[in-house]
Amino acid sequence: MKLGVLGPEGTYSEKAAMLWSIESDLIYFKDFEDALIAVEKGELDAGVVPLENSLEGAIGLIMDLLLNLKVKIVGEINIPIRHCLVGRGEGDIKVILSHPQALAQCRQYIRSNFPAAEIRTTGSTSHAARLAQEFPEMAAIAGAGVAEKYGLTVLARDIQDGQDNVTRFVIVGRDIPPATGKDKTSLVVYLQRDNPGALYGILKEFALRNINLTRIESRPSRKSLGDYYFFIDIEGHMNDSQVKDALRGVRDKSAMVKVLGSYPRA
Figure 1 (cartoon, one colour):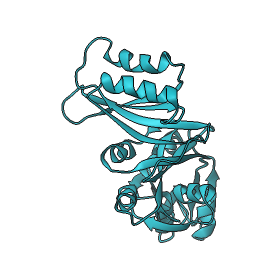
Figure 2 (cartoon, rainbow, N blue to C red):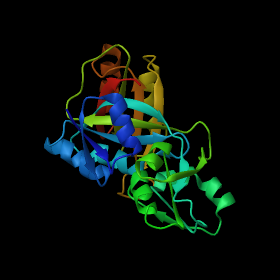
Figure 3 (cartoon, one colour):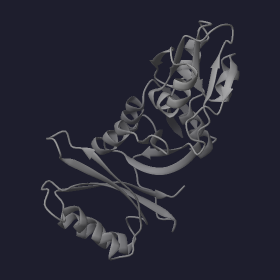
Figure 4 (cartoon, rainbow, N blue to C red):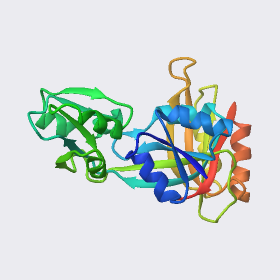
């Protein structure tokens, strides 16, 4: 199996991919969009991308890609994230580099310890570590394993703003796997007309059938201010009878419903 992940070597998406399928061939991409487009084209069997983080919430880019591409979520895995400050350790740190998500997850640490440092974003945490090899005044926010891979020193450990820092990664392919009995279904709903009780009418379809919602998130439709898509995760597989009935009711009350995937729960 060919799995697309964010590169270069040492990223958290690489770690998630290896935990999900240790025998797969990993193909590295400069960004998540290229990886998922390759999945859609059939150049990859699947791609591994982050969907949400316990500190920073949902990742808008991935939500938009799942909405617009012809791909399906086929699995998920939750990865504890332990950020470190890594660098050559040879002088005062003037520049801190990392992926925007990692920088956001360590905002308070940076403000408290390096208030004058210049902050620069990179395509991934491992890319930041690679750049930090070049100059003694640069440091990167990345995992401890990345420091060893790129010959850097761990300058500080567990610098994320919350100890319970977990990222949910999803495995994105093209075909929905069969039900296992312990599944989750992700979908996106567009109401089109905002009227009193519209969203309640959607959620009621699940409540009446005792289907548990594990996540609901709004995302701008980019059509007009105040117009949203709703991303919903529920327990159960789309082929379960109760879930089928609920989805039928949701479609009757919505302008658009897209099932993003049905897959085993992490």
